[in-house]
Amino acid sequence: MFQSTTILSVRHKGVVAIGGDGQVTMSSFIVKKKACKIRKLYHDKVIVGFAGAAADAFALLERFEAKLEKYQGNMLRSAHELAKDWRTDKVLRKLESLLTAVDKDYTLLISGSGEIIEPDDGIIGIGSGGQFATAAARALVAHSKLSTRQIVEEALKITAEICVYTNANIRVEEIK
Image 1: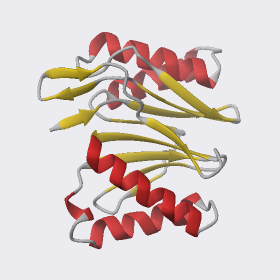
Image 2 (image 1 turned 180 degrees about the vertical axis):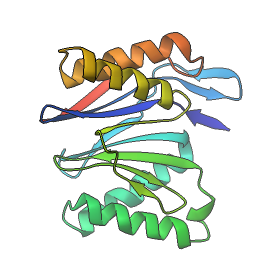
Image 3 (image 1 turned 120 degrees about the vertical axis):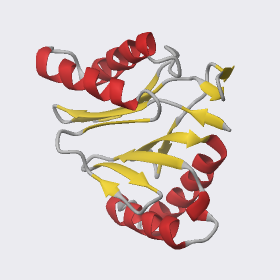
C-alpha cells in the first residue's frame, strides 16, 4: 500500500499553516520524494492535508471539496457531512486515510470513524511522523519567536531527521 506520511497544521498568532513532507512509501521503500500532500480548496480559503493511502485520500479530498461547494465554504458543516458519509457509506467506510483541514476559524482532524477533532492548542500532526511533528511544533510555539510558517517548516525538518517515513522536501501553505 502506498502511504503519504507527515502533515502538520499549526494555528499561531492569527495565522494558520499546513505543511507536508514529500515522501511516499510502499512498505519500506521510498517510491516518491516530492509528493504534494496539501491542497487549497474552495477559492483558496480552506487548506487540506492528508495522510494514509494516497488513492483513498484523493477520493476523500474530492468528496470534501464537493461538500465545501455545497455548503458554500462552511468548513465545519462540510467536515461533519463528510464524516457522516465516511462512516455510513459501505465504500467510503473502507478508505484508509486521515484529513486535516484548516480555514480562518477552524483546525480540524477528520477520520473515517466519524471523528472530527479540533485540537485545544491549534496544532495537529497526522501520518507516520505526525506525533514527532506535533511535539516539535508545540516546543517551537512555546519557546521561540518564529512565524507560523517557520514553526511548521522547522518542526517538519526536525521530524525528517528522526522519522524514516518523513523527508525534508517540505511544502507549506498558509492562511492569514
